[in-house]
Length: 459
Image (tube, rainbow, N blue to C red; front, side, top):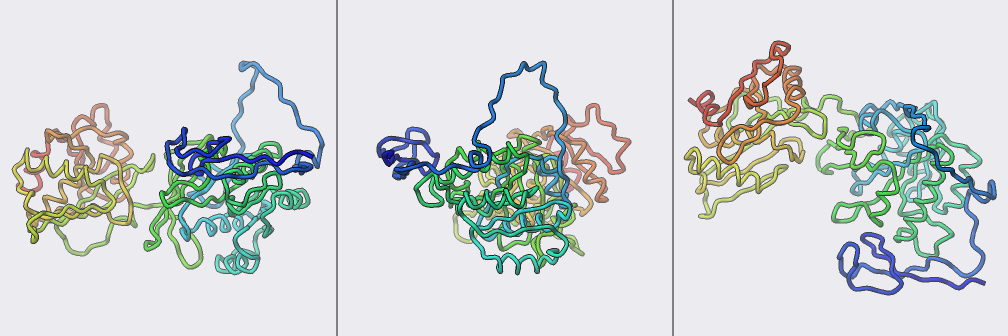
């Protein structure tokens, strides 16, 4: 009889050690090692591969010039936002990990996917909810009668693979990986070794059978996916489902994608009947206001590779507490302080004695420097109490000397503003070299310095 083997794992990065350590040598975190039983005494339980065939397929090395490349045949889903994020559809044999905060809508998104694929046999494995709870959510989505979807409430991987062998599904969804338990490992579900072993078994199944597998993963309070960091390296695609539970909009972002761009994102609106795709996010991110208001500017930004127009709101008021307040929502506070310093040093605006509040409408968090120009215009519009024209868009990065710097993918930004009916867009003059201005209906104004823009808009 084999001896029971115990080892220590770092809960943050999955580093394995034969003894307990106070500080992890891999991720430098303190007090993260826990003891786990990795191999029980007795006979090892066979996995799904050895039960079926008894032997493993051996691979042979091949010269790279003899390998014939062909495009992956993808499974297109009715969800165009998911197709966009995955790079054109689901790749057979791929392993996709979806992470997000509790209650953000991960299970709803996956169940909605399972119920909108009537031509595929889908197995939805849940270790967190009962069959009645899943059926109740399926009735709310109101598409359960159209799909060939099977529900399995199980946490043992051995039983899951037995059901897979009987049903032979074309798509498998696991909700969630932290609830699965492998008989090869004697630790509790959700531990580092269990998450890693269960993911490895699902990965072998996906690659050898060609069946795509979606895995839902919990996240920690820091926002990273719970479990060892090696989990994100094992899968083919990592998707992050983001959003504020107090807002109706959700963002599905590709963090890693071996079969497409890792800069894509999809936008959804949470409704009572499930998640609705938002095909034109610019329309929902721009408020419909009847009268002109000061402190509002429209910026042409890129979220990943997707152009969209957002509304930048600013409020400048006299400081009532002596020390001026600086508050931002959806925009980096340090960058706003830098832009305020540019306004004060280069253009003489006395903002050091005033409160400045900045907000990105719609609950988005923006890191694109191309909205600098819109931020400046919104702040000055609020301070001077002069409304900006509602048909004007800004796209430009502002340097420390007050110059308007060139930004990337200017054609996509101009085309998005043109499509939504805006009349004028202000850009850097260094962006229009080689640009065909005649193919756009929108008026393109190219400037090199911020003071030129001040003179045109505020006199």
